[in-house]
Image 1 (spheres, helix red, strand yellow):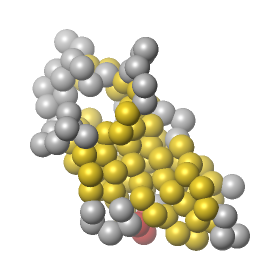
Image 2 (cartoon, one colour; image 1 turned 45 degrees about the vertical axis):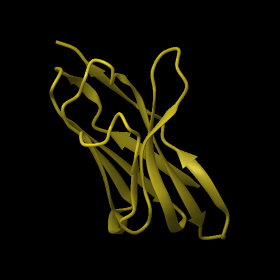
Image 3 (cartoon, helix red, strand yellow; image 1 turned 180 degrees about the horizontal axis):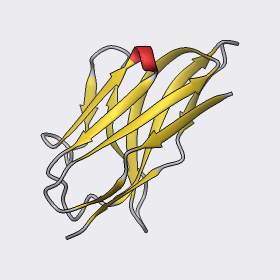
Image 4 (cartoon, one colour; image 1 turned 120 degrees about the horizontal axis):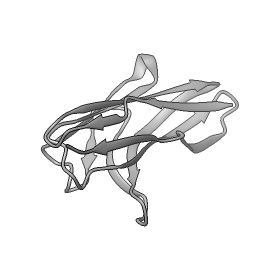
Length: 120
């Protein structure tokens, strides 16, 4: 069993910052890519940022320059630092991870989501 548990969401004023965390646990052998997605009401889930097991990162255009994704492989944790939050950023933010388990079963896992609200 593998679980992804997110934390760090909440309410912030426009221009503020939040740091999301997502920790993977369970029978993990290796974690490939990790990423953050978001889904606003009435919209499709979209990629925010992703990071390889190394240092390669990819960002959606709306997050470039404002969001930073990072990971701590020793802790099986991925982070999303969000700065200069805008009124269009509110959504449920989900982390995902491409994981190979101890039994060599590989799959993409998702967290339960954490709400980010931007309001004055």
